[in-house]
Every structure is written in C-alpha cells, then in structure tokens.
Image 1 (cartoon, rainbow, N blue to C red):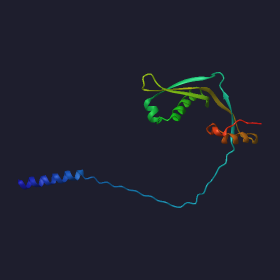
Image 2: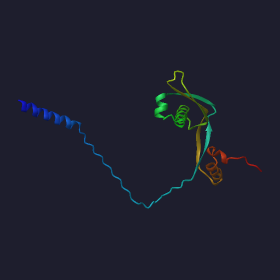
Image 3: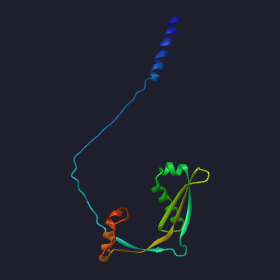
Image 4: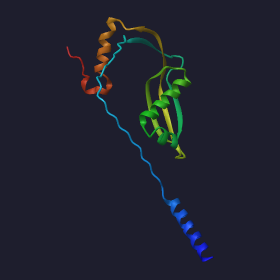
Length: 159
C-alpha cells in the first residue's frame, strides 16, 4: 500500500509539474533582397470644378454630439479627426460635397460625459468638372506653393 501511495504521489507530482511547464515556440524570418527600383509614373491632367454654394440654406450651424469613447478612443482625441467627422456629418445632412469656410467649436457637454462639436459654414456642391486648360495652370502652380499652411511665403503684391 505504501508503494502504491508513493507511486501515485510521484505520478501526481510529475503531472502537476508538467502542467506548469510551458512550451514557447518563437518563429521569425527576415529576408532582404536588392531591388532595382523601377518606378512607373502616371501623369494626370488636373481637373477644375465650379463650387456652387447653396444659397437657399445660407449659413448652416450643426451640432454633433460625441461620447467620450468616440472622441478619445475611436478618434484618438485628434482634433483633425473630430473636425473631419463633423464636416462629414454636416455634408451628409445638407447633401453637400463640401462645407465652405467651416469653423468649429468643440466643448464638453453639460453632463461631462462627452463632447459637442459645432460646425458653422456654407454647404456647397461641385459642378462643371473639366480638364484644366493652360490658362488654369498658373494659379494651380501658385496654389501648390502658396497655401495657408505656408503663411510665411504669402506676402502682399507691391507694384
């Protein structure tokens, strides 16, 4: 009987120790090759379009509520993401392609459980798409080099 209890204890101890032993397998592979970088470029003629502001609606003001989770987790608390969401929602509401001169106000709601994003601007749609002509190229080229992001490059024209 003692032998049986001893064997049973050893088997139990071995089984218990075996369950705690974890087998970890890590696989990794990295390959590097030299490439002759072949680039294929497609050149597209620029497009121009008319922007038609919806005068029947005039200046709109929309408020879009966001939960804390939506703003801070899903949109990563990024103001650009929050603004883009609000413009998208207003564009959908007013059946517009763009909200011209959009301004924003982002504040916490009264309960403190989320945010309210206010969008103010003018809904507009694109019309009369056409391939740019030579007369359009000068202002297209200027726009590429002189944007509001490059304010220090913009200066008044002095004659």
